[in-house]
Image (tube, rainbow, N blue to C red):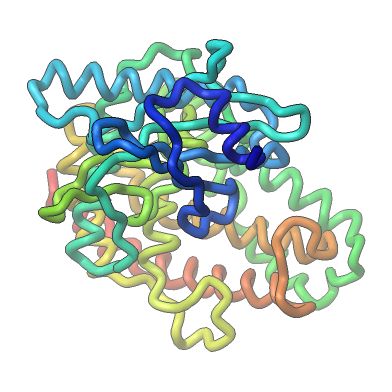
Length: 361
């Protein structure tokens, strides 16, 4: 029997399976489309979970179950129609678990959402739709009880933890590269106290943790035939965090006029049209729950996530390129410098960002 078919049959799939073929080009999990023979039965998505990244698969799947059930409940209460296309549906294994372990790999299945598509284009219109969708996504999850979700990647967006790892890398200087990047180390340390502000405010009880997506990209949403947003997908990193993370992560990636590893720094700056569009949509979607301090800190989020990625790239460079895949020896150095250039651009535009955010209130 086909090994993938053998895995798929461990789940409560309706109907007979016609074919199983690779789906998409994800960088983390291996994904397959499971087509069934009848039009009366749904198709499915089968995934092999990357256990090297997501070490606690039971916690991961429980998070997704809590989130998808909450979204379904909220949509139902709001009188929404076509709910089955507006929230992911987990298919349990035949033993009742939310995953299947074959002795080496962890697998899971969800129902394939029919007549849906993703967008790859970054422009003001798609940025506005993305902002609104992620804001609405957070608003539906805001009343999930504290402790119901765990961290699928511990300390993923914890700046204090990232700086701790960075300082160890500087001290150990394993790849003997410190001398060439000492100026970058100095720039990072110059901003360190400010960039740990979110954790400090949280400890003081001033900044709450919400349920955040932690991977706010335009292609992590599904659209229907008319171009309207159906739902947010790729829920592996949904966990407690600060709204500044989700806001800043989109600006860092989608709002960069250059590439993440651009060698021509003249290409790299923050696209303020993308910032304004995303911010407008996000505040519209999340206004119902955002505190004044959270809204005020949205531009800070753009700085924070760009600073964080600068720190992560430089940490890996100092450690000898052990985490990120590189295409040439200085790749992580180039990435670090490009991220730092983007950070400078965000700092230069921060006053304008703050002004725009105030105008949305």
